[in-house]
Picture: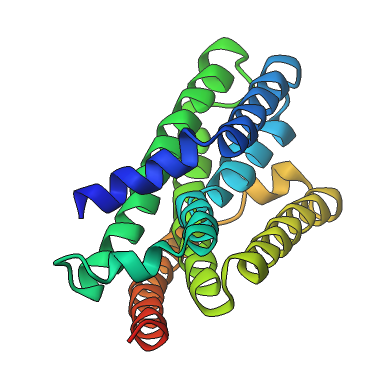
Length: 215
């Protein structure tokens, strides 16, 4: 399992094309944080944009595995399909933890350096982003396994556009300040339960699809 996780991270960070995409996205976010210090941007980054990156290791590894035919080789290893799929989900989760740390650092900048938002509402947005990230990871990973790397990537792009468009629409029609005044605690609790359930469903559906495809 450890070898699969290391392979997924190698394909995410060490292949030049993927590394360039990752560094470009990282630099773009840093530039936005440096020059856009308003509340709207903070929510867009921490609550919407960064939560969408969790399925990247699955996306990159599936693309490379399809090119190299690695799945046929992987099945000869002394690993069950459950462990193979678990390793892929662990890769995504570890990557997601990294994005949470990055989001937390950005939150601290907006709270203590820019003083755009107070700590407590900033933490609420950060936690909401974590919940969203688990749900998106579940949906995207399941989509990648069912549809394959190319169609699954299209699904990921569509979900990204929908999330960003939904936030822009809400911000323009409801207002960022009004969104922050909503009773969020019950919504976050319900969202967390749904996200965890989605994660388990996603894993078992992906396992079924993988088992059927490579049996």
